Length: 253
Length: 352
Ligand SMILES: Cc1ncc(C[n+]2csc(CCOP(=O)(O)OP(=O)(O)O)c2C)c(N)n1
Image (cartoon, rainbow over all chains, first blue to last red; front, side, top):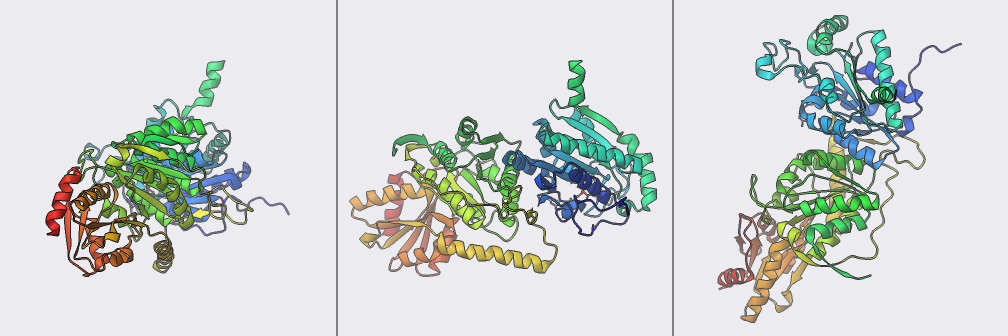
């Protein structure tokens, strides 16, 4: 009998606690598969954020630490300086990474810290019950923006990839989505490239993944994906925003 | 090699930390501790260590959290306002049971205050400081030599009990120069391979460091384990010094750090005037030497607490005495420091 699909060794047997239709599980799976395929599970250290993914320390089958809200890139900096031969990744939501942890994100990128940052953009604070995030769209409703986000008052949705790409040093910055099987395959490629880049000590790899939050958006999972495609992708276009490897190749040719 | 070197306190503690094997230091500049961060910037690259100027004290303490989680000797330093910012991280380090050393070269507060020496972070240091049910051992130096000696001691305590340890100095000790002798050997580092990240002897299971315990029963038992460790620390690590108790003084002065130095000079001056007073100087502020102070105060008429603040350690002194005798408080705020003559005068008046 040929095995065509199985659990990845990059994840533990623990049952994911995420809501039905949530894409955190998909993001976990592609990171787990990438670790397995690169044979780095035993030399990877993962960092769980404060947010829906706080229990990630139960799910990834590598050494894990759960850290204060927003501080994952700073903790990752300390880890990777102490264990330069380990592969270090953070896994963060938009509140964690782009609100309370903005400074840590920007400065880790600016230092080109040799870490991978996996950024799950679901346009809301999931864990605390659907409050407004820095990535919440204009006029989108959230429990702390009950009349819809007023961009004149609260600012517009933050495009983190574009912000970070203006820095000189970060090695690789990309935005992918988890909205269809094809997108997921692309996302996995980006994740694998990031972890492989860390193995080669190339520096800061940032993979933003456009995701959904059916529970807090109040939508069926498929409807949520449809909505994300129609409403989020135009605001958060997919693509590669910085690729120093490509820049260097081009400069050399 | 018992060579005496003239150094500022900030430099001496940095040098001692490096000699003790600290190779990962993260901090953000602030007066009056900047010589410490600058010394580390100069020396760490020469010994193959990591010096990193963080984007904030918040980031610095979280870098320490990361390095500590990997089981290496790691340290940060700052002064009062910066230490406030580190408190969230210190709470996580305590909850994660990680060894790390934090130096606070205290300055005037509250708010931006000033850059003069004060002892106004005593409450913050000795009552956990951040959120949650925890303590950190606190070491209070009163000479540059003692400040330097506390670096290896802090690492030793930190590793023995897997806890953050705070060295609570002040701007005076940070800035003043005194001769320092560095010991030839330092406590060896404990093997962290049964808990640290990326560090396994034979890998049976992953190392997971976590402070989230949704189930109240689990958090209760985790907290109880923490407090069992605190009981051990209280049993083994209480440190204090007494001075001039052999004269059987009727007045006992309780004071720590820089203030205690001035008290010693005042006691010497009073002795020449025929007035005897004793000094009780807590060296660990947590655990506070409650029993030792109670015993030292047996038979005295009163205990006077002298601090460079509006009265913080004074509360621990009263807890120690538990009504044994009357107490008084002498303090200065604003970063003002007593002169020995001035203090001798105040103490003599309180004695009569
Ligand atoms: C210092 C601090 N502030 C606030 C919180 C409360 N909190 C927990 S998760 C969270 C937001 C998480 O949202 P996001 O990062 O977008 O991740 P998601 O839950 O959507 O995956 C907040 C505000 C906290 N735990 N700590």
